[in-house]
Length: 68
Image (tube, rainbow, N blue to C red; front, side, top):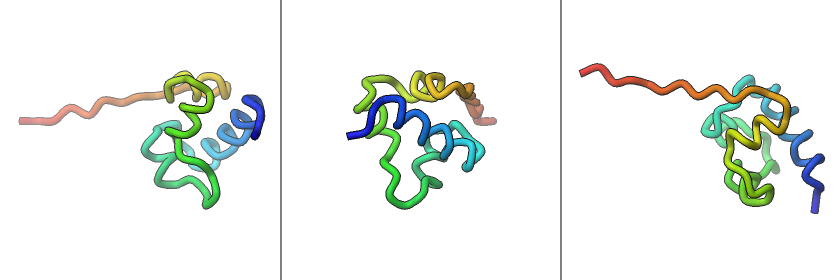
């Protein structure tokens, strides 16, 4: 099994390739063979924003507001 540092380095590379730190975007656009975001969170015992921050990237969450 990979170390925490190896997981974070691979994730950072993949997030930079995708151009987004959004969890949904990562799961949709990850390369074949990469594990899902939920698996990464479970292995590291962190939430997705915490995982992204550990990579050294900033986590941006934009809440969409529905217009009525």
